[in-house]
Amino acid sequence: MSNRTPMIRQSSWLMSIPQFLLLGAAIAIAVSVTESASTGMVIGAGITLAYSFGSRLILAGAHQRAMRLIKQQQYEAAITEFEASYAFFERFPWLDRLRAFVMMMPSPAGYREMALLNTAYCYSQLDDWPTARVYYERVIDDFGDTSGIAALTLKMLDTAERTF
Image (cartoon, rainbow, N blue to C red; front, top):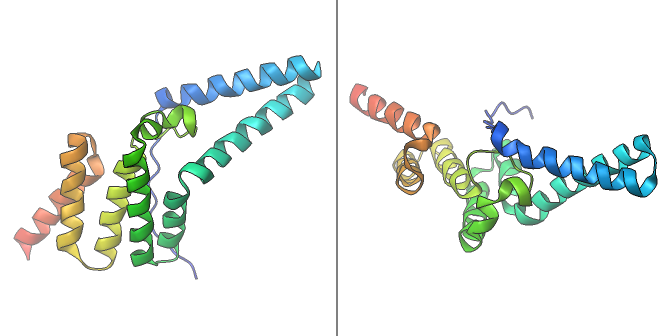
């Protein structure tokens, strides 16, 4: 089954700096231990990659499961996983704030914001527009007008309501 669900992935160059620094440090350590530039580069890059994927798998597992469920168009199950992701990062907000270091995630939006946006999207796919609106408004309330996705979607909903 081919699914053309749009996925938006935002990246911040500023938040990518920690990734480059950690990669450089891992390569430098591996080169000094192996005393071989080529071997050290491969080992350092491999360690960085394993850390990046491993930390996201462990800490953002519910979010990743939810994204897979969206791709499979299982929106109700995805909502449950996004709620679990939101609850986890609500309990440990420092992980969300330091995601560029802890999980090597260069997104300007945190996992809590992404969980709310994706929950709203899931409700919209279930044609539950009133609940979707509540979640988009919650994004604006919790994270301000920095969420262009929520603000744009709310404008679109307002226009659609006035038109129809």
